[in-house]
Amino acid sequence: MTTLTTLAPHQAKERLHELTVIDVRTPGEYAGGHIPGALNIPLDQLDRALPEIRGAAERGEVLVVCASGARSENACRKLAEQGVHTATLAGGTGAWAAQGQELDRPVACDVKAVWSMDRQVRLTAGSLVLLGLALGEFVHPAFRLLSAGVAGGLVFSAVSNTCGMAALLAKLPHNRPAKADLDATLARLRGL
Image (cartoon, rainbow, N blue to C red; front, side):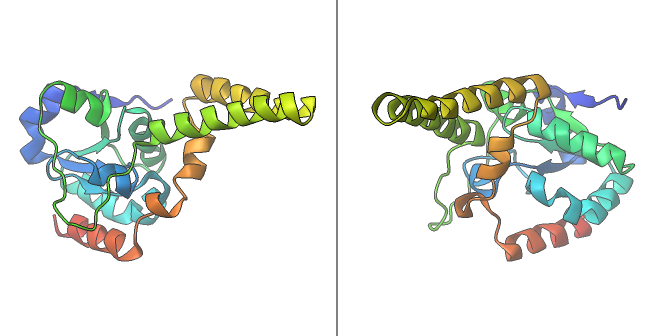
């Protein structure tokens, strides 16, 4: 079993100048506010970025962040399986901001704020449960199985610390990185 290195927000703040920070949230979440200097490499693009992340880890310490710490822990485990040692930020950018640390936000006019992934999951799960209950009441009782399926998925998500719904939602166009943006990020990571 891999032991994760975890940094508290105050520890990361003190060492920010010496860390390469990789934010594994979707580009929309990243645009909503990220740790200063963080590079956006969405979790589903980690395999593609592995050579650049490995190079950065050989040059110095790499800190992986997300909204709450769950995705960054998963990313750190995936990277450890490939022989790349990284650390995760305890509590993610949420804890960073809660401790009064600043977040960078792009000033580009074309960047729209996207809801955080956990908020998108809550909206989708809640909507599916309500839909299943309404259809079960007014169309056919079997539609209540939709609500039961979502509830089962949420329980599995909590127990396994993974989220299939988040993985699906991350594939939506507003959560997907533009290829050129990821290429530019990887070029920056190589140059660090």
